[in-house]
Amino acid sequence: MVNPWKIKQAANVVLSGGIIAYPTEAVYGLGCNPLISSAVIRLLQLKHRPMEKGLILVAADILQLKPFITIPSNEILRKITESWPGPVTWVLPAKPGIPPTLTGAHQTLAVRVSAHPLVQALCREIDQPLVSTSANQESAPPARSALAVRRFFGQEIDFILHGTVNLSARPTEIRDALTDKVLRAG
Image (tube, rainbow, N blue to C red; front, side, top):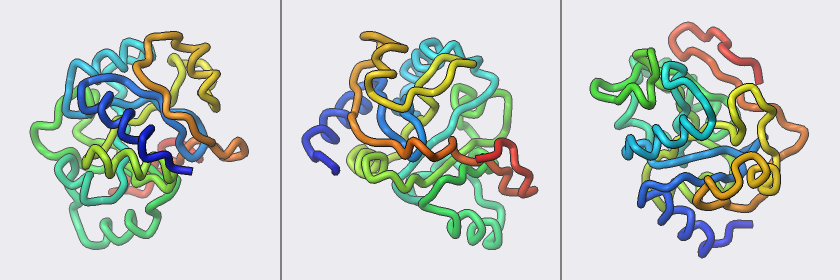
């Protein structure tokens, strides 16, 4: 169930440069405003994640992602939109000027339109995509509850949006949109 007041609280934290934890389809995610580089860097430091790997942006719809990515053809557009909203993350060419805090060592960006109602409500409230990475430190299993997030990160997270994840689901599949190659199985 979507609590509008909690969504507004989470959105205010994101828009002011904070880091939040929130439920996704399979695990809890950590997120921040992709346009505030200090927030992205802080998130990477919390996870002990090398910037070279890059991050995922999650959105309520494809329009929120268009300022960040280039969709090379109508065929690719059709292919990705047929899988959304849903558990497939697509890697697409990044628009010029997208910072390496998001792309890492790549010229591409991983993006997804989520089917989770809280993620959708949050992205609509902030009117943009959200950085999305699993709520864990690099190489640890991802958190699947708000309590697990708190155990991992203590008070280092600015806000936890409580909700449910599908405990039987696996993290989203990641595919290269140009080659269809599976980069991470779901």
